[in-house]
Image (cartoon, rainbow, N blue to C red; front, side):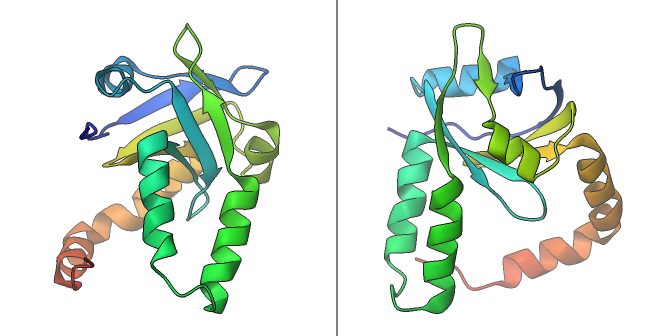
Amino acid sequence: MREELLTGSFPRNLDDKHRFVLPKPIREALGRSNCSVLYIAPGTDGSLVVYTEQSFLELGEQLGHASPTARDIRAFGRLFYARAHRVEIDRQGRVRIPADLANLFALGKEIMLVGVRDHMEVWGRVQWEKYLSDKQPFYDEIAENAFSQPRSE
């Protein structure tokens, strides 16, 4: 089954239990895939990543093609999977970020949920705004570099 593209930026608030409500466009995209389970793990640049079960499995397969003796591959696997959590979307469309991840990334109460093709990212609102102000002026250069990279098969 092909998954829906996850796009958009959505301001959200975390409640006292580190839960946030998935925005309607994301719920609809996940609903078309019959998705009720997500995986939350450390991301890059100070964000958390949120994968559907299918995307999480595909990431694991991609990582499985790398050399298991490569130091960075071993370290990434340990750091990533040791902190990854399986979470369920509740009946109100909420997702709970495990406290250890919320605290590790100092998310605070205000977050941004960002759709990034096959996954979502969770950023602290202030960190996301700083990231945008740092990177947006270089969008053209970043786009040129991104599309000049060799494609991985």
